[in-house]
Length: 474
Image 1: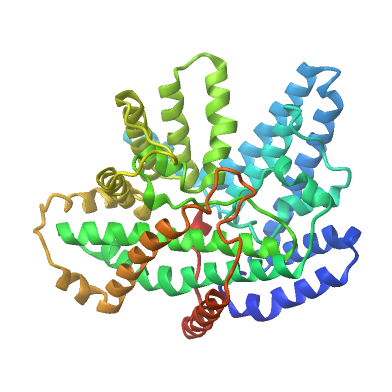
Image 2: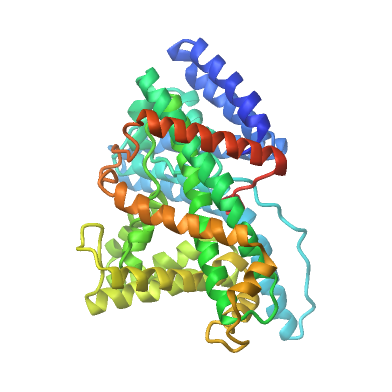
C-alpha cells in the first residue's frame, strides 16, 4: 500500500485514525502496531514475519545490552556486536545477495571455473530503513544514550510506524522515546499535519509524476545528445527531490496527525554551494545516521584519517542506495569531491554567505552524478555520459519535447521555479534543531491553495491509478 493510492486515502487512513483516536492513550501503541502491520502486509504478508523477527531480535538484544551495560561493558559490547552483525547479515542477504552472486559468478567464469546461479532474492520493502532504526536502538542503549522500552509493544510501534516505515525519515529512538510514552494531540497539530500531507501529496503527484517522462526519455534514448543528457539528468534530480521530499512531507504530516514530531528530512538542498553542504541538506536523517554510526566510529578507531573516513562513509552511502557498481561509484563520486573540497578549503555549510556562482556549480555537479543513480547500471550510465560533451551531437529542446511533451517541460520549469521560490521563502523556517518545522503556520489563502492542489492531485491520481515512490526500491 502506498500513500498515493485511493485505497489509502479513502479507506485505510480514515479507518485507522478513527480507531486511533477512539482508543485510550495506553492502547494507542497497539493500534499503531496493528495498523502498521496491516499497511506493510498489504504488499507481501510473508515478509511481515521477517519484519516481526527483526523487531523481536533487537528488542531482546536491547534488554540484554542494558542489563550488562553498567556491570560488564565487555560482555555488553559482545552482545552489541552479535546484534549488529545479525541486522547487517539480514540486510546484506536480501539487498546484496543477487549482486554478490553475479559478481562472484562472473569472476569465476573468467577464471574458467563453472559458474553457478542463485535463485533471485526479493528485496523486502523498506528493509534498509527499518534495519537502520533497529541498529540505532541497540547502539544508543550501549552508548548510554537511551534506555530500552518497558513494553515490547512500544518498541514495535517505534519500528513499524507506518508513515515513515517504507522510506523514512529514519527515526532515532532516543529522539522519539518520550513521544512514545506521551504526546500531545490537538486540532491545531492535526490540521498542520493534514496540510503537510497535502503539500507532499501535491509535490509527488503533480510535479514529480509529471516530470517522470523526461527521466524515461533519457533512460530510453540511445546515443543521447548533450541537451538530452543535461535536461534529462536535471529532470531526474528535480523528480527525485519532489518524489522523495514529497514522501517525507507526507510522512511528517501523518506523524503530526498522530501527535508525533518526526525530524525534518530536507533543508532546501538546491541552495547548496558545495557537495558537502548538499549532503547536509539532502536526506538529513540518513546523513546524520551515517555521521553518528559510521563516520565517527571510524574516526574513533584512530586507524584512518578524516578524509579517508569521509570517503568510506560516502562509498557506503552509495552502496546503501543500491546493490550495483553504479551506486558504488555514485557514492565514491561524492566522497572524492567532498574530500577535495575540504582539502581546498572550499567546503560550505548552511550558514555560509550565499554565492549564486558556487550554488550553480554545486547543483551542476550533483546533476552530473544522476546518470549513475537513475540507471543503477554502470554500463548504461557510461552510455549516457558519452553524450555529456556532445559526442552524439548537440541536440535540441525540440527533440526532447517531441520525445516527451511540452507539458512535461513546463512542469520541469514549474519545479525549478518552486525550488527557487521556496528556497528563498522557507529558508528562515529550516533550522538546525530537529524540533523546528518549516510549516509552523498555514494561512487561509495557503489552505485554499493546498486544497485546490490536493483535489487536482487526487483527480490526476484517479486517472493514472498507480504512483510508486522512487525510494521504495532502496
